[in-house]
Length: 371
Image 1: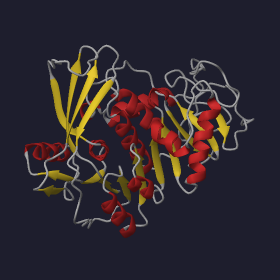
Image 2: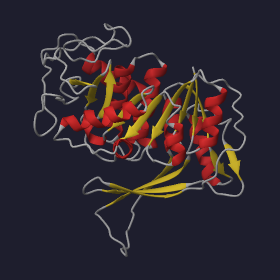
Image 3: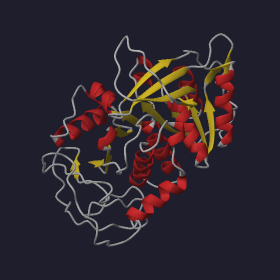
């Protein structure tokens, strides 16, 4: 299984600050972490770390930052054959400031805006992943390898990203972009808004599989026309930076290994949740063993009597109830037509993940079970 990841790679500096700051302040930074960053770069790094044959296609500068980035990729087995060097522009750099008091982060990005020129992808990929940062290289890859499974991670909306979204098979939106494209707002006190936003995107991109990440609320997806929400796992919050990249990488790993949609989303949720308990995006990535052991611990035992249902939003809604990932395994369901699925009940027992054939609906217990 060969994966090409196209898009941004840059050097990222993460620092912790003691409190919020305002314009004109002198902010003292006691320590910092330097490592590679960028959506595409982080996705490729995780896939390499988890043992996938991964190639990164990015433009970086002819400088020390570029050398560090290449060495990091190579340390986890990511192939750098398709990294190109710009002699006109330096490698991009981002500064991430983590407020220790509330764990909010502020990011400053200095991007090189240098793009690939050769598009010489001689390896035929099974999967193409893009963050939309390099439109021409992505279109060239899509055109050249139409049989490859294609993933677009949507964090910024540009004309180029909107154009690419017409071609990708999997669209992974963050909440802000999902709201902009759907022209609707999500209200976590009104679960029908989750369904409405998802439906609007599905109408616009009816041939794509759509996932919406919701930060600390989890992610939305659909199985057999049923809109569902996977809540996050519970870990002590340290730094959310890069969690979305890690989610995307872990999800792609699951799909590449035929886990099925729902188990892949569970892996993505666990990986992203673990990462928020650690500082810095690249350094916070869990190992595959950490994620698989957590998954097996939550979903590997049949008929566990200790699983309980916990409502995750402030007021209940009959169209969609959610559960704490750390207490039980998955949400409730609403279908794409906004009708309540009459087959869902609150039986908290856990199905083994290998008991339901791939792409089949979740059983009447509402459990994760695709493999």
